[in-house]
Length: 562
Image 1 (spheres, rainbow, N blue to C red):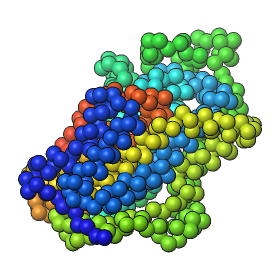
Image 2: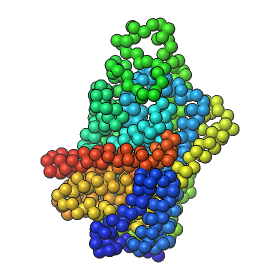
Image 3: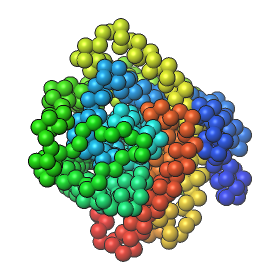
Image 4: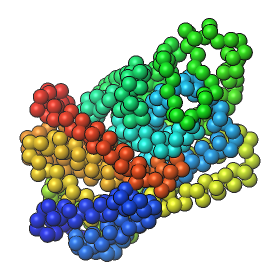
C-alpha cells in the first residue's frame, strides 16, 4: 500500500492548518491548562493525532498506527534509555554518598547559586549536548543540580533554558550533517552560517539564564562572570564552526568556557553570595586572594576537601563524560554498530511503512518516498554508554552487583510513567511527520512574504517544538526552507541555517524535553507549570534569532557564506 501526503484537505489553507495543529493543542492543553499527568496527556495527543491523520488527511489507518508504534519504539531506544541510564548513575552517586562531596567541591569554587547554574547548566550541559544530545544534557545536568541543592523546579526549568545555544551542533554535529543532506547545500557554508547566528545568542543566553532565576540587580552583580561564560563560549563556537569542523563545536565551546570560568572565579567572586531563601548555610565558603588571609587556620582546613575524595566523588560523571564522548566518535560508533545485525543491512524496514508514504510538492521539489528504517543499534545508543558508565562507576565505588540491581530496579519503577510519556510523545511526532501535518503547519509560515526570514526562523522553532529534535526539524523543513528562499530571492544557505538556529529555541518547550526534565528532577506532574514558565522565554529568544536572520538577509547579506 502506498499513499501520497495531502497538504490542504479542506481546500482552505488556514482551516487545514488549524486542524493539523489539533494533536499539539490537545497535548499541551492537557499538560499546561488542565494539568493532566503527562503519560495520559501523551496518550490523548497520540489518539488525536491518529484520528486527524486518518480521518481528515486520509492516511490509511495501517500507516498511521504503524508510524505511532515506530515513533514509540524510537523514543524508547533513543530518548527514554538515556534518561533512565542518567538517573541510574545519579541514584548510584546519591546512594554512595558521593553527591554530598560533589556539592561541597562545587561550593569550594563558589557557593553562589547564580554562578553554579552557569557552570553546570550552561557549560557542563553544552559538553553533554555536543557529545550526546537527544535529552541527555537536560537529564544529566538536571539531576546534577538537584544534587547540588537546587529546587527541583529551578533545576528543570533552568536546564531547559540553558540547553539552547549548543543544540544546533548536538550529538557530534548531527543536526548540521542532516541539514546538508536534505537541503543539498554545502555543509561548510551551512556550518559557517549557523556559526554566525548562534554565537550572538550564546552571549545572551547566560545573562538570560541568570535573570530567569534572580532580579536585575542580582544579575548585574555577576555580570563579569556572565561575560566570561558567554564570550568564551561564543568565540569558540564561531571559530570552530567557521574554520575547523561541525563535529566538536559544542564540546570545545563547553570545555573552554568551563575552564575559563573556573579560572576566572579563582580570582574574582561577587561581593554578595546569592542563595535561595530556604537554603542552608553553605558548608564551604569560596576562598579568594582578598579573603584568604582573613580566614583562620582551623576554618581554612574545614573548607578544604581531600583531593582524593573530590576525585572519587566526581568520578561517576567523569566516566560518564568519557563514555559519551567515545560513543560519539564516528569510528567507535561504526565499530559498535557492526555488532548489530540490523545495522549491517542499513536497519530493519518498518513493516507497511517503509517507502509507503510519499512527500510531494511544494514540500519537496520531486516526489520522494519516506524511509522508515529502525536501526536497533542497542550497543551504539547513547543510553547504553550512560548505562555502562553507571555500572562501571558503581563497581569502582565498591557497590555490589546485587545492590546495583536493586538501585536500577528502584530507578526503573520511579521512571515508569516518564518512559511511557516519552514513548507516546515521540509517537505523536512520527504520526505528524508521516501524515504530512508537520508540513501543513510549516507551509503556513511560507505565506509571510518579505517577513519570511523572521517567520522562517520560527518554522525551525516549530519543527523542534513538534519533534523534540533539531535534527528532525532540519530533516522535515530543510528542503522547504531552500525552496521557499529561492522563490523569494533569499539566500538558501541563510534560511536553512535559520531553520537550525531558530530550532534550538524550540527545544525548551517541546513536550519530550519537558518530560525528560521533570523525570530527571523528580517533578513528574509539574509539566504544565514548567511549560508555562519557559514558554515566553522560548518565544522571546526565538524572536531575537529571527531579528538576527532578518539583519543578515537585508542589511549584512555580504556576511552570508557562498
